[in-house]
Image (cartoon, rainbow, N blue to C red; front, side, top):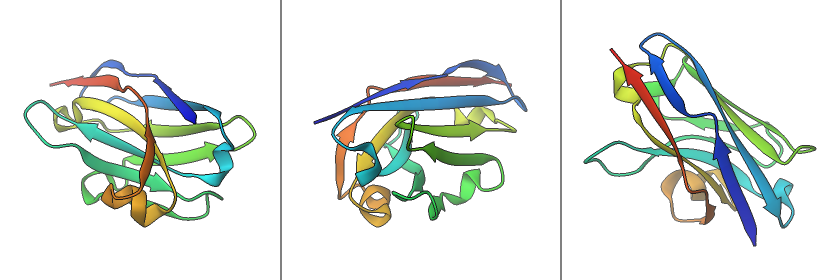
Length: 124
């Protein structure tokens, strides 16, 4: 089992920044690709970013490219999501996810573990 705990959400004005963290405990964290999903009110959950086990490969959804950066520190069992130039459309609950491969996590077909989410609200 892997437990994922997110933190760092909050209220920010448009154009501002937040950094989300997800700490993993339990089984070997470095064995998993890690991703961030988000779900806005009335919308389906979407994959925002994914990072490979080693941290050398990443995937970003088009809407966040150039604004969001994912990174991981395997020594600290932590994955980060730096979010800059935030827009009201980024408002959502952000979930951390762990899975076998980048593609598996990105498509949602191979997500083994989920965090409980952290709320990000961007005001205009």
